[in-house]
Length: 171
Length: 171
Image (cartoon, rainbow over all chains, first blue to last red; front, side, top):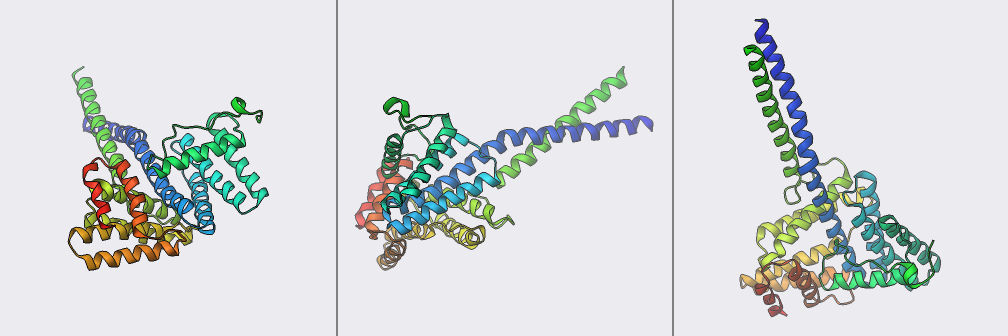
């Protein structure tokens, strides 16, 4: 009788330990992959709609869409662990540059400078480099032309030139 | 000695069984949350509802746009996702440009109607496109213009490019 109880206890303990190990392993592999996929997909869809507004709509609608996208990113960052922070910061820099350019068009220099600074900061978080205003303008022109031609948005092959390479604006 | 061996065997089998069940449970949870299957209404949190809605919209759009075969299932999935996002976006403090998504959906429906030789329905959907884009502040709200944009995005994601030029026939 004692022997049977030992076997039952052993089976239970081993099964529970196995369950926890298996659950954690799947969470770290399949779960992490699914999380990356879900974040990328949701963000890219939100961006597609907001960027279509930026490129095709009037200034008021374009600004509203970009502000909303920025808010979505902010909430996403606050509620979830960002799976690929580099790509996320790169995408945020694009949104902030759109807002900077819209502010510039509206003649709001203060807002332009603030958004530009925030965009520079976002790229700085990616690779610890501070890019000049000129480099940021080039960066957003390239990114927008990629979007128009239907190129992927979330992959980031082109980065703005480093400030030190072209101008003296650096930290 | 024999008893020890038997205990080891039972322990290993129980551990393996537990591991398998744990792994399957976690993997199952991830599968239920995949973008095309995720239920935006399932979460109590409004932001997560919007996030899942965008996941589902992106997955349905990708699948619906592939190979220029907008089947009813994918179009309904998009419709469902857009409605789900709309119902929870305001409560989450967001206002995404859903009219652009609706216009894109109407364009795909127009394409499906054209394939079924239902020209009246096609015209109705194209009118919807125009109305939605005008409401979104687009400078060029013609269905032909949106078709060009959607075609560019589809042709990038599309693995069946030979069939896509058909999109231009209805211009």
